[in-house]
Image (tube, rainbow, N blue to C red; front, side, top):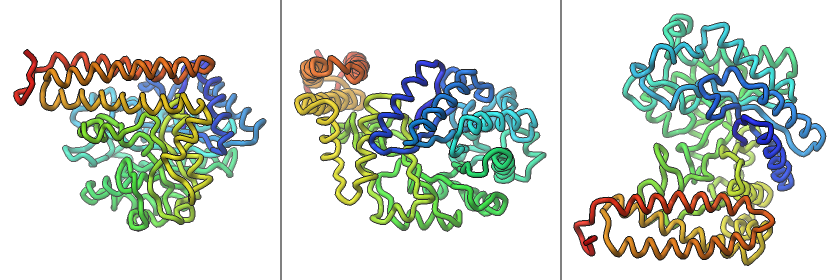
Length: 429
C-alpha cells in the first residue's frame, strides 16, 4: 500500500518503490488518495493525483509485473470516529450520501482510476464513521438528509457500492469492486451490540455477490488467525473475506490501537524497527482467503517499510519454510551486507531499551539509575548508528530514517528526565 501524494517527486519515488517490490514478486499495489493537505477536501483531488495515477498506470502496462488498485474512503475528512453530537454542522455537509454532487465527486474519483488502468477499487468505510451514541462501534448516518433518504447505513452503503458498479460497467467490467465495512473484524462485530449482524444481513441482499469484503481477523491487528475466526466472519457475510493484514506494526503501535510500546515497558524491548511478517495463519489459508489476495495495510513509503515488505514476499512465496527471524536476517544481509546488518540489529536493541526506560519513567517516576541507564543507552545507539552511516554511504536513506527516530526518542528521554522523582528507590536529589 502506498499513501497519497502531493508532488510529482513522490510519484517518481513510489514508482521506484513499486519496481523494487515487484522484484520480490509482490505484484499488486494499492494507492491511497489522501494526504495531510487534502484530507478535508479529498473529493477535489489536485491535478497531480490524476497525473500520478496515469504515470503508475503506464509503468504497470510497460513492466507487466504488477497491477494496482485505488483506495477511496469517503469519510476521511472526519478525524476518527467521533460522537454525532460533537460534529459541527458544516462537517456533516462536506460529503454525504444523498447529495448528488457528493456522489458525482466520488464517482469522478473512481473514473480517474479507471482511465489510468486500475484493476480494482477498494471502497473503505472503516475507522472514520461518526458514532450515533457513546458506544465505540455504534456507526450510523450522520447527515439529516441521509437519514430521510435511506432506511439505514447499510442501504446508503449499498447504494454507493451499486453506483460504483454502474460506473465500472460503462468502462471496464473486469475491475473488481472491493469493500471495507465499518465493522471489519470479529471484535468490532462482537462490540456492535447487534448492529453489525443486521448491517451485513441487509447489505449482502442489496449488492452483487462478487463484491469482495475485507476483514482484519479477530481484531484490528491480528497476529494469530485460525479457521474459527474465519468461519465466524464468513457466517456473517456468506463468503470468504479478503484478509486486510494490519500486523506489520502491531507491536510498535501507539495511541488507540497501541501495542507493547504503549503500555508494557518490559515487552517493548522485544519490538523491532524492522519487524518481519509473523502473522500465524492456517496452513491452507491461501485457499480460504477471499480471491486468494492478501492486502498488507501498511505504507510502503520508507526504507524501513521496504525491509518489512521483503519479509512479506518471503512468506508469500516460501510459506512452508518461512521463519520470520531468519527471513529478516537474509533481507538485511542481502540489502546492506553482513556487518551493517549486525549493526542494525544492535541499534534496534538499544533503541527499544531506551524507549522502555522512558516508559518506566512515565509510569513510575524518575531516578538516577534510570537516567544513568538511559544516557549509557544513548551512547550505545550513537556508536552503532555511526557504524551504520559508514556502511551505507552510497545508500543513506535508511540512515536518515534511523537518525530521525533516534533524535525523537532522545528528545522524549530528555523530557522524561523532568518528570517527578520516583518515591521508591534511588530518587533524584
